Length: 95
Figure 1 (cartoon, rainbow, N blue to C red):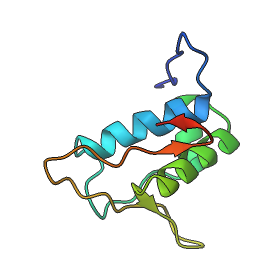
Figure 2 (cartoon, rainbow, N blue to C red):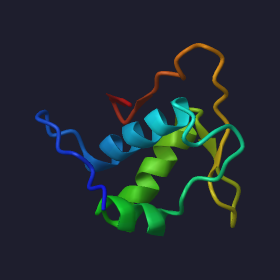
Figure 3 (cartoon, rainbow, N blue to C red):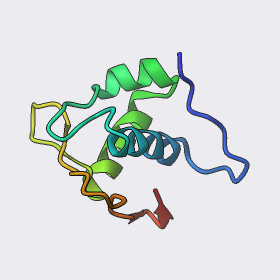
Figure 4 (cartoon, helix red, strand yellow):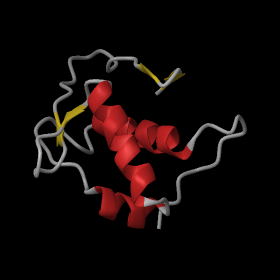
């Protein structure tokens, strides 16, 4: 299991998971067009609740890294162009 690492600043787990997933999108682990794991699978992999995993996926949608169509898995839409991905302040926290 890959538990979401603890931060010294007490960043919420959903933000830590969103940052981890964003890093994997930006490093090509999840390339453009690929499907992200379900909230259930993310919860199992990272030892978080399904609600936390869903919230992290929502953050990726709001930041422009993924999209979600009802009844479909989240899909990566961020395209690497030699630049860092969009910086996003969601709920007052930058992911």
